[in-house]
Image (cartoon, rainbow, N blue to C red; front, side):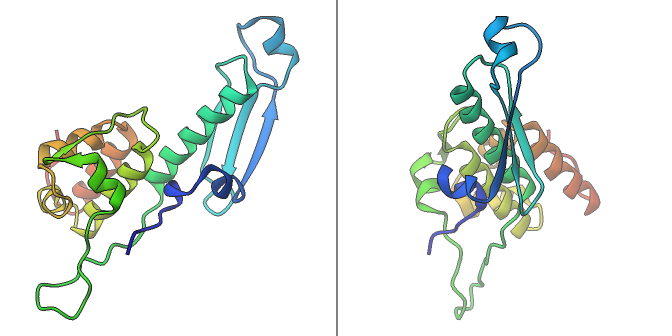
Length: 177
């Protein structure tokens, strides 16, 4: 059974859960930027998480950037329960998603911070880390990668890395470096 995190949703499905606002950009960029509503802010209605983009002169480009930023913020801010199961049988044990298995080859996570799959991969990693009680080594084992690779992925989004470290501190665990 494949998981479904809000950061995994297709763009149309995600936007159906959001409010999109357009406004005029400010700052440098010329007459076009200051006369046309090119700035985009997207607010996910259920969570209140928002993202915006206004650095480009094109509304379409800013829209695409804002959607990506929203997916990353949702990946960091929304947790889905992961059923880890037990070794005694009875419960279904967790297995990484198809996307995770495609992006994690030979124990190496192959996705960078700008890749379309990054928010989904990050969300899954954070969900598994939480299900493992913030034990990154255990989570890495469950996901089929090294602890170093998992930490590198988390570092790719500073807010994700900081959120995991805050949770670890709350449990009396040392900070990840």
